[in-house]
Amino acid sequence: MQEPVLVLNANYEPINVCTTRRAIGLVLGGKAAMVANGRGYIRTIKELLPKPSVIRLAVQVHRPRPHVKLTRREVFRRDNYTCQYCGRRDGGLTVDHVLPRHHGGLHTWTNVVAACPSCNHHKGGRSPEEAHMKLMRHPKEPPENAGYIFGRHLAENNEWTQYITGW
Ligand SMILES: [Zn+2]
Image (cartoon, rainbow, N blue to C red; front, side, top):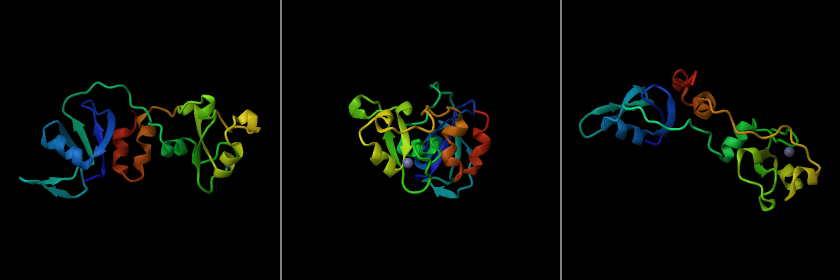
């Protein structure tokens, strides 16, 4: 019941991902309609319901365009799983604050990068200039298109592609 379900606005714009449990609540409550299923069935009190993969809200909701949430996983994805100082792709990655937080660096997209443990350790609590380290590129907020925002789900939910493309 925790599988991700893609939520479309009434105009078919993809706006969110929710759990199967939440999606079924919306469908049973008449707030959303099933758009795609194919994940088997769940038994409700009254009926056997196909498990949704994509649902569409009955009433258009107004909300700002979704942004990519700043999480470790999304930082690594933006930086292509590559240390932004040395270019290494193997081994574990860490999140580095370019300007360290105790120097007033913010936890924002433009101040975080993926760094391998040895670069992060070498940099310590210093700025790249102080540590004589060079960033491969300056960190930016990821693109706001739906293909990027929901992209991390696509490998496991390929059927979403047609609902995301173009937004
Ligand atoms: Zn490195």
